[in-house]
Image (tube, rainbow, N blue to C red; front, side, top):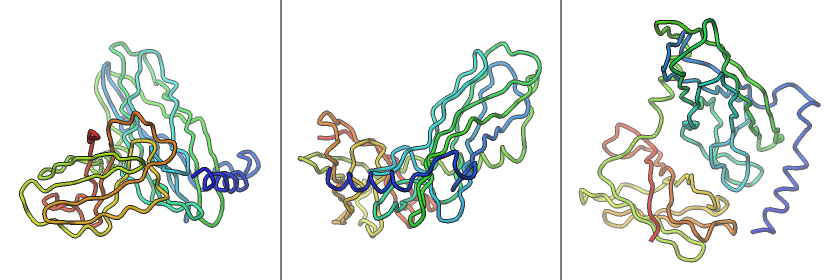
Length: 279
């Protein structure tokens, strides 16, 4: 695998331009948006990093795979404010040169819940974050971007909402992956392979497995090797390859199992969250 990664790194280094040499943003336009205009003491509210992609460009999910850099936020908040983890929108398969990766070709909203302290200052407060991302296009270039972003909210005695951003954030929240009932999962590791098995608990014949793909949140999965799910009876089985960087101490597999037509009984939900202990 090292022999594959070395030329890939050379390609990326060759196409990465200087951030200061060109336009302020290449491939994507980042912005912080907030669902609230006025907050009250102790309130938890949502701020989102809006990533608007230019045509042909993509950015990366929390685990990009064997290539790419996940978008990150480093918060600089007023005293007493706390920020949760990024709540990641469901990913797509993206191609960088000839390599498969996990990211976003469509515009994305990455959600973060912010909690205010029990005592707030009077007047507006500034919520700041440094965003770092990589925007790539298959036949163009990769661009590492970074920007200090800011959004301001007022403080008061009653909550007030920012209608358009709140509508956008609520829509993104509805699209976050949800548990799918009627299935159980198991996984076993042997050498550099993990066999993931999904069983229909209602003993119904398995749906067509074509297009099913596992987006792993667990590091060390080799996304350069094609997954080939198969169906037998009421089971779906897929073999996932590990990279040479996978930890020997890996005990769980976490991620999203995707089916293009949606999972039965979910009204079209395409992504099934899984956390499986490895046998």
